[in-house]
Length: 115
Image (cartoon, rainbow, N blue to C red; front, side, top):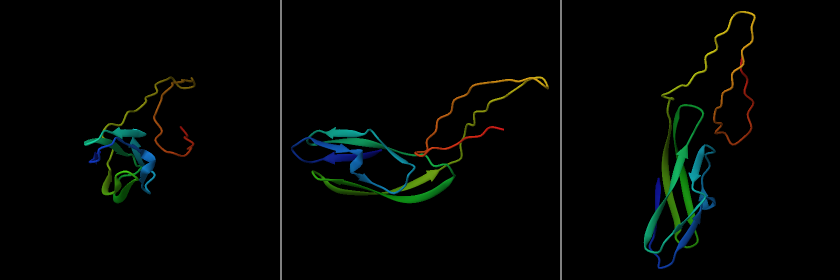
């Protein structure tokens, strides 16, 4: 969570498009917030990489009303703690079909194969 303070006497609206970052696995929610005068609000920052890794990333907010805020993020991709699995049990020579759902976090299309 990144908290942004509005020290001005006017309400300020900030969109997630005002953030600048290079890492494609960073996601900022909500799309926009309105910070009342003399108050503070926050954006939630999510990092969902595909591999276990650790790296630093600069996140910069450029707001016309509030100026420039720079944040150094330490991003950690950890090993999954709970692996859900799907089990098939059927006799030899028979077919079994089961449906399952999973969430795709990549921003680009991907082809999945089950063998």
